[in-house]
Length: 412
Image (cartoon, rainbow, N blue to C red; front, side, top):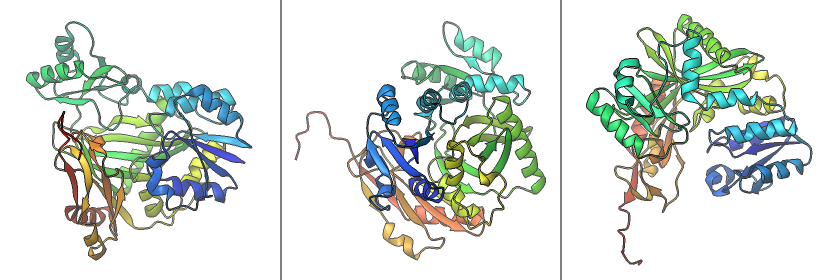
């Protein structure tokens, strides 16, 4: 029996393989580029899973591959880029999955905002920023400060903060020259610390597995820099968040599977930033496995099979708190390597480096998460201590780039 992954997040394949094995399933990875998963794949036995290199954007070809996959029982599509392709294929093949309409809704940030506003779960509404007079209308309907962003954006790309009218004009001008995955919209900017809730939902009931902190770059950028899990909220606050998250997910019709819900904790309560219909990216899944003391990816396999995940009811033995720091270079350019990794062995928290880029890769954007070359991970007795360990380790590491070759330079 087989479960197919239509691409995957950068990290987590090892846990998925072990989860599939535990449930008597064979994992198959369909990917355009196996090298993207090199860090994970080289740590697995060559026969641990089946890796099929194919054009995963070619829906008809992928459908044909799935039809020919022996004993196919489930399809996992855990990335933003392939969410809707996976939904279409699951529906076409009659595999367990969420209603594709719900997944289409989650990929439209403006529609989510308006759905939550209609349900009384946010103070702000979305406004499409198109056509003549958009600036004047935005000032009247949304006000300042405001956030302008792509309805289908990922990784904090194509997001602009407008705190005053000059910044608004500059944001509108810059956005006009960008190629968006969706369309440009505006919403109120909610001030406060940013978190992400890691949840699992089944048959309409949501369990809050924990909350990750999300320390961001200074305004006006939204670059993710440090994450720690689990945040130690007082029990009453945690219970309130779990109820609120259940209402938020119910409002968009989200009935099953993992969700990664980013929110701001404002003086008036939590406000959703966005809802991602998947487990958290970067090392969030890895951190959940270690901090909760269970392989949470078993729930991903179970839900792909249409089975109630044991994680909905399991007692969690727990483990160390975790934190990680995204490693960005000081300047854009060609990635040439990392220094300081030899120092990690002598530092507290068992720090480790998780590579994302290979030498020679271009690093063009440092204002969002496209710019990091790897991740420094560490542990501690609490999320606070894990953060201290991770930051200290990251301070010893330098991500190096060299300037891009100038046009006309001869090769060496």
